[in-house]
Length: 288
Image (cartoon, rainbow, N blue to C red; front, top):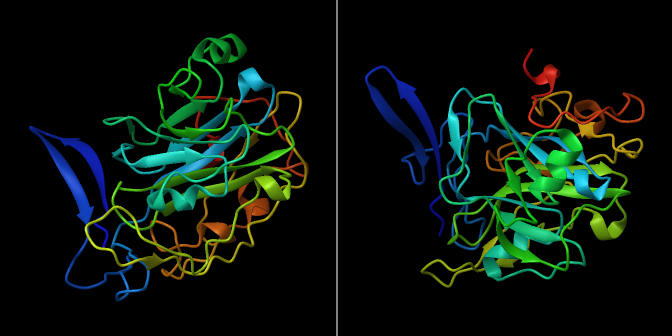
């Protein structure tokens, strides 16, 4: 079974409080989901994830990054969040997944956090290369090891033609991971797309030996109409609400199906032109 906790830190007058939403609770509440019986999804009742991938740069190598935005009004602990560019990320609880050359799975370091309405940038190259490209330092660097590398095949980087950027949650014990946000940046090949985890059963390192199963993924997330080349980035221009399946039974943290997002409505593309990267800056459309 899984115990999933997302902690939000907030400072109030005269005290610091820890707001936790943890599993189990006596009964499901609006906007929450609960775990099925044995053999089903080893899920948890959790609040909607406030974290979104908001910007991706696929080239040049020294400028590649993934940016994450905290849409909530409170700081979010990143300790149990991971980033990956390979579709096998969801197999992590059953053991280190097989990934392709240049791909990676990495975890945010213990105690890392993202401020309210703030962003963190994950550079694929070194912090020095990133800083030379943009004039500011990244929050984390895969090459420098300021992220905890779970696995990397060769030198980690993003495929220039298109790549999956996956943000997910795993508590280190449960049978399954929870999707926080997924985006197919550019026009990924089949090797760089979202793999199907629908119905997959696996047993994580928790105390029991009963496997749990992922629910059905729609895998209808749209491919962008073009690829951000020549040092441009692709940016989120709208929230997911109303643009993905929100039935409460998906593999997302809040029960949404992150593989169903209509990214042609929520991200820019060749129709809404790609633009110069803005690392460290929240896309203006998300602050309106």
